[in-house]
Amino acid sequence: MRISIIGSNGLLSDSIGHFYGTPDNYLELYGLAEPKRHAYNEFHRIDLMRDEFNYPQIKESDIIIYAVGAGIQSNMYEPPDVIYNLNVHIPIKVCCFLKSIDYSGVFVTFGSYFEIGENNEDKSYTEEDILFSMNKVVNDYSISKRLLTRFSSSFSSSFKIWHLILPTIYGENESKHRLIPSTLKALDNNLNIRFTSGEQIRQYIYVGEIPVIINLAVEKKLPHGIYNIMGNETLSVKDLVSILFDCNKKKLPESVFGGESRADTGMKMLKLDGNKLQKIVDYTPAHKIIDVYDKYQSLD
Image 1: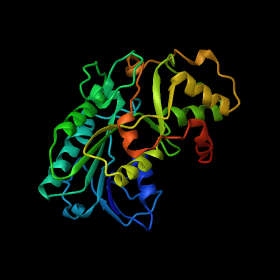
Image 2: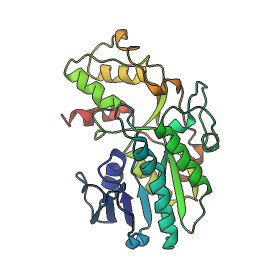
Image 3: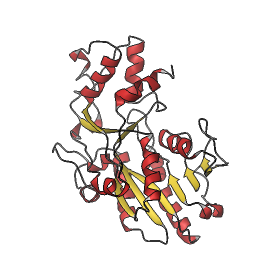
Image 4: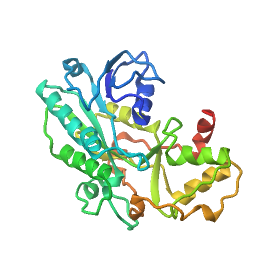
């Protein structure tokens, strides 16, 4: 199979590249820097913020995956124009380019359950719920993802679009600023650490399961559409932190909660209903955070 990934060295693109970087596949990458952690056949250096995406040879790909993203980490400031360009305008331009060259394969993009917006209702949102959500959203990242989801629901072409809406993904190669690696670093170095109230409920999925699901979607000939990928674990932030403290054999003091404020605290409950996709691909994610704890530690 011939696979093209737009984006290199991010958590998601790296995991997908690692899965497909085998002798059985032909893997092409488009991004700022050559992949560091997996094999590939071709790399095309492109700055999507400055360069036009004009690669007619991509027409030969069976599947093209847009794995570029901006604004994901709330504690790392990225200008709004970067967020909207990388998350909305450029994938739309790629879609239009693919249509112009009569591409006939599959184009994969990603949404986020942050599109749900502020919510304290204990329910799992379907694809339709997310598509038509009018809940208040609190940042440019969430708005940009809403825009791409609504575009994906309407765009018509000779190729399929699979727009996959993700919960919180995690993995051993994620940025050190994210919740799990930053907490583990603080524990390893006996640093002071502070969290929000910890009451927010989130779904979590190990990033290595995303390419497995994509590959099953290829095998099952998944129809064009929007699909939720449901997380394997639903935990409060406090529950997740407690798991990390337990793995380190340290007691979790209640004083670490309530000392920080974040824009997403109004999103009390974010859960996806993934039954639509699961019925087709017949796969349920199995990894739990505790199962991959050692992978984080092995990077030290």
